[in-house]
Length: 469
Image 1 (cartoon, rainbow, N blue to C red):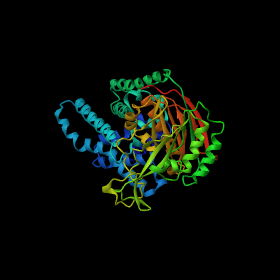
Image 2: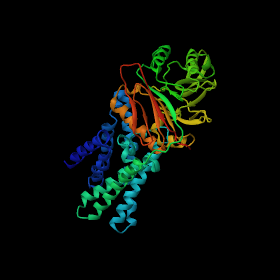
Image 3: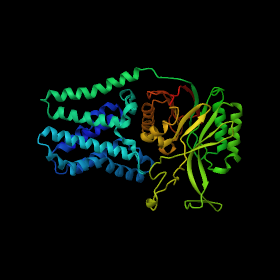
Image 4: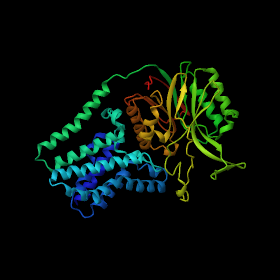
């Protein structure tokens, strides 16, 4: 009976943490700790069940997209997140006999578990099946005021905070007679919160201004590109000026794939050039599907030409030079399947790995900005590495049509992405198709948000101050 009560409390607290107030995460893992410290013979099985049901509470929207892929994703990712618990319970727990005192045994056990968990989250950002959505630190995307210190620790600092506080509160509940437990819990809860509020009140450092026009499109991906250009021209009327540095269009906004060596010969290119003639200081960044001839490719063929397919961001300006950035972080299975798994009965975009000289920053006069494509912005470590090469401004292209209008998924996505602003002390501007477009400052505050609506395209202009390298 106690197992079922703890499971109910676990699910209730996790739902509050991810859908109401992130601070509930500081106590949400206490039921799991109680289970792991109990004498239940099946506690390892129950622990996996706890992790599995947590996925259902947080990312149930995956089943709206594709129930089979969603189920496999939840089962597999639950195993990944369960691995630190299993390793600590079945393997590393046997080493505590080195310590004579019970307190040292507990400290050793908890330390090993936290190290294993943080290692798992780190590796989960870096391998081909990366799905860091449920990194514990991401939960605070809904209330970034509590984690301004991510600028120094990154998102894993939030994961560490969640586990240390939960362990401290567990001991407060299991050993209520020890006052020191309450003192320690109070310190590790309120000290980071106080530091974060202090950092939040500090003024933003600024040097030079930049004006970016971003958009939210409600036009279906498969719609004709000429129609999209017509609607774009109407939406831009009266919005942009000669002071606008960038026009940011969504990921794969234009449906027609582009051959790498024929971009300038397309009607699309000519129409965008006409727009540039009206605003010579403007640079246009748009998402597209790029096709590169490749004799070694066996995935795609057109009129006898084998080619590789890339999801790219392309920058155009009046210089006539095209700058192309290839997407480097892929949604597992959906966008990329390694060769040894390509016999699985799943559809995929089969995107190709980027070239070695792939750059993730674009220049506009004396300004250099990082450009992220959709899923790349979920990966904290990728963004941190690449932003160092820019002027600390984040521009983002995304398409959320695959989310099938799930409000929960779109809001979670926006919250996770804005944590990149805090981690890198950089403003973030996101254009989106069928999703939430927004601009946020270096503290992760939404300054402007554009939600899906009845208008084909909504455009907003945001002025900010990129931080120097």
